[in-house]
Length: 265
Length: 292
Ligand SMILES: Nc1ncnc2c1ncn2[C@@H]1O[C@H](COP(=O)(O)OP(=O)(O)OP(=O)(O)O)[C@@H](O)[C@H]1O
Ligand SMILES: [Mg+2]
Image (cartoon, rainbow over all chains, first blue to last red):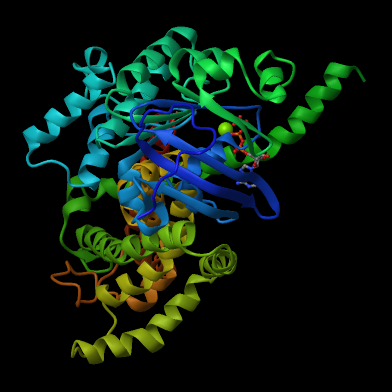
């Protein structure tokens, strides 16, 4: 077992529970290195935001956490990522992805009914005892994702006919139906209008009671509003990491300050 | 010449081939009906479609094409039983399993397979497959519905594989990604997400494969055995509608009832093929709509 040492970025002195520990992470696409020796601890039941200009490696970093990078043959990963102290490469990746859910930038419900979208993962992981139990779990997930009232009368309707915001909440419901421990969001609101965005943000606030959340966002206000910790990534380097308040009010690094004040990015 | 005149001329030039094909289609339909309908002066539509005996040259002749319709359907069904699973499995292999290198070498082979003339398939069936079928199933001759289904099934595989492969490859990557992110493995993703999403396209592939088998003439003429009798099993010789027309047109005197009857068979063939095509069209359109 690895004794998890809080990194020098560590913002809190009191005991904090580390859910995910990223150590010396390096990621290459063929010859291009896009993540450079990143060390980062994600605290349990908190929201950690990853911000940074386009192309700095935010999606790559977040995809490494649930091993979605395995799907990209040209991607190569060095370093270690621990989930509750256990190396994610020592786990079965399907089980890892059940424990670490992911919500993508573009809503991507399956071309199936609303019900079947949620039931999909439950069936894959055999997480229900009976038909009623399945129905109950689908309902619960939709309620948690604040979508139930809008869809309860049309569970058998085609999911792609929902609005973009509803589709994204459906994807969140589909993800949390599996009772993951961590939920990764990769710019979940960038394809949505402001009203739908507010709904998703409220939802994330709500979810953090039960889940550890990592969210990539382009939107600095969003990071400030919903996150407890913020990591600023620039050209693959983790420039600064700390409590969101501290990062936004007294950034230690000049580059962070420039980025936050809109001087580049 | 004025500009608009010039444009019209150019338009006309490109319009010509399109209108020509419509013209030919209409011509064929008119000839079919003109030469086929007179048979119904000597027999009723019901007797024609459901009559059990095809004795066109007897005195008096009988023009029941039920054995031929059943022959066509039996062979088509048998061929689909073979070609649909293999064709779709091939498509899955090419689009989801094979490495890019294998994929690049398999695709031309399949196209080549589709380009082999049917007489070659027929010859292969007659000389190689039929004797083996006779041996394995202990039959006097191996020319029967089973052998025909086998050969036609192989012939339909390229059609089904290549169209299904297009449909599977057209499934947006984001669905696959979503499935993996939920912890599904490759096979769960293929069976529960990709195949259903490609379902419309695969259905189209199956229908077009079916149309290919059903309209095939030379091969069935050579390997199906040729008996115009209602088949009782796959191991009896059968005669399809297409094979009947091909085999008898040469000897039928123009303007005779036999001649008209053959044209009437062609009408039946045409109507059924047309419905296959319309069905394929409707299904693929619905599929496109569903994926947005
Ligand atoms: N599959 C890939 N193959 C090669 N290069 C890639 C691949 N995916 C991403 N890249 C490159 O890696 C770098 C980081 O990409 P990444 O998607 O992680 O950035 P990002 O911070 O998420 O950007 P954005 O804010 O635009 O989403 C970019 O330069 C990108 O072009
Ligand atoms: Mg990104």
